[in-house]
Image (tube, rainbow, N blue to C red; front, side, top):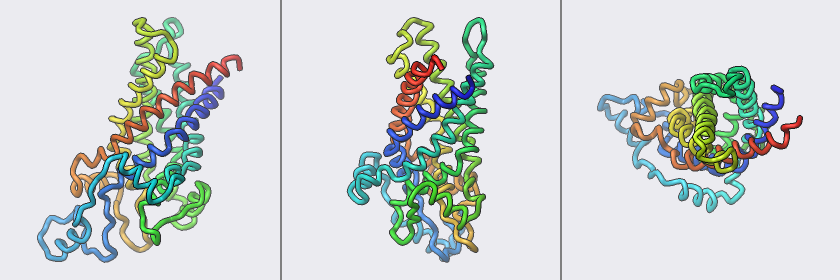
Length: 320
């Protein structure tokens, strides 16, 4: 019974991940807008510059002036298509498949197991607090398992925005993971894992708990029957809640995972908190919601495809 939940969740997650991959890629590109690496010999990163020393002012001007103009998701998508071709919208899709296979299969399966254990046998219902707790546990474990694929996916999606001589040019997710392990050490595969775990806990708790809660409320109050309409409505609600809750962590996660660490040089960010502080100082608090439109645009369809597919897979496998 437990294995069945992993299979059902895995199939639904892979279908949803692949079908919404271009939106996820656009989201990553938008989250990196405004991020400028420091020049090789900059005396001080402007995010930490509080004085008026000329060298600091020069470094700040070199890094942040002129500031690149942020553009919307449609413009980003069109630019990718025009400059990199249609195939670029699916850059890193192999990493998406691996990520969903590891991360989403684990979180969906664990959530299903906890849901079975914690559901009241008489009412057949599970309290919201338990749903949230189950989501936090399942999301955290799933993220820890899938972090290498997550790092690879972010890098492959972001590669096209770099100058040709700075691109990593990974051929596949296997090549990406292999290169990272060889060039940066095995530990690099879990770079940003704390952020990945935190984001996954937030997403899974808000997404799965909201879906189950809204679905139960709709059916209980006889608004709609347990069918496609109910599944789509509950999915959109779950996607919106998950996007609002997770976007700030997602922006920091993307930047930490994508940063290029040169041996012997100080990395752009010392960690998640350092990245958050530098991002807010350099670009303002709203920078934490960069990519929100494609996030909600992707999270909505992703969640709908995920749960509608999941419900159909459950029907197909109900006798197994």
